[in-house]
Amino acid sequence: RSNCMNVDMEDPNMDPLEWSVRKVIPVPKAYFWETGNENLPTRTKMWHRTVGVLEKSARGLEKAGEFVANTFGFNASEYDYVTSTMTKEQWEASKARAREQRRKSMAYLEQKEKEKKEEVVAADIGVTKDAL
Image (cartoon, rainbow, N blue to C red; front, top):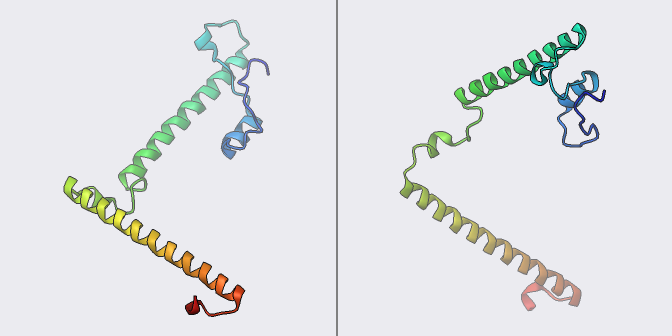
């Protein structure tokens, strides 16, 4: 297997399908037509051609799938039909509203955290929160 690609089969980020295929199918480091080495057994040449055709087929199917997904909007945002028609001014207004909402949300959460701390302190000393 020294003439095959070396990959880390223990890589946790490896695609499970790729792992399964590589476990069964040894992928050549370089195909005989790339190296110019024609002095190989016919069986090895056939294997190289088979793996090469499978590789090109997989790439072609992936491109076709991407085309279909883009055509039907599977890769688009849920709100793409709105955002794709927005002007620069509308985007700026939307960003300003989003910043304001985030600021309000953070202030609300900080207030709730403060109230919670006050309740804990009041409970520790045995009084109501309003007495503080």
